Image 1: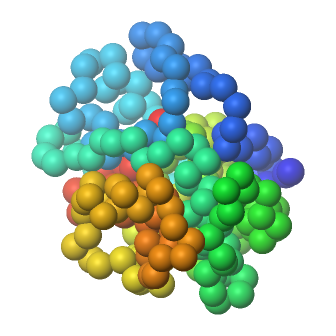
Image 2 (image 1 turned 180 degrees about the horizontal axis):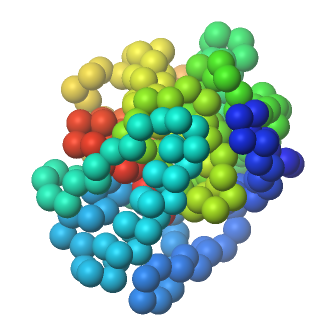
Length: 247
């Protein structure tokens, strides 16, 4: 499926459905690793070795170029202070959270939990959302939905439509400010307490053994865990002024 951004006229091909299949190789400075799931990092320059720091500064320069072309302000990437780094889930997990967002955007209500063996990417509502084009004004969950599921960045700058550029890692640039707002709304609808730790025993149990007959957020154990983890990362990005990276 082709993507376009109304302000840039750029077209991209969506090829990031990693909801199944074998591990993929991931190129990094100095070699290649095998990626098994979605890792999220905030504060990539903090404690980074020189070659990694140089590589990431070049990535930031590309991001700054895209922002400047849209008349948006830049940011100053911190080199010290707090950061965030964790594995959110396998690639399929992000799609389960996006499925909830797509249903809320389309119909104002959460869908039934996925049955055993069902894939989020087979949901026609989510498929329709992926076929849609990020535009201005944006949809209520565009920064969550319209982004690569395996690489790319969210920058701590507030802007409305997701930005597209084929020279960026992942091809699409999101705002961590908007992402945080979207995740806060998802958490509210799910009924997730503000102070709930994603590693709390009740969250781990619900994500490991989802129960569609449970009440509230526990019906969506996997989605709740991912929402909480990704919200921590987005909040860290906004509070520290550091880029949030999918890798």
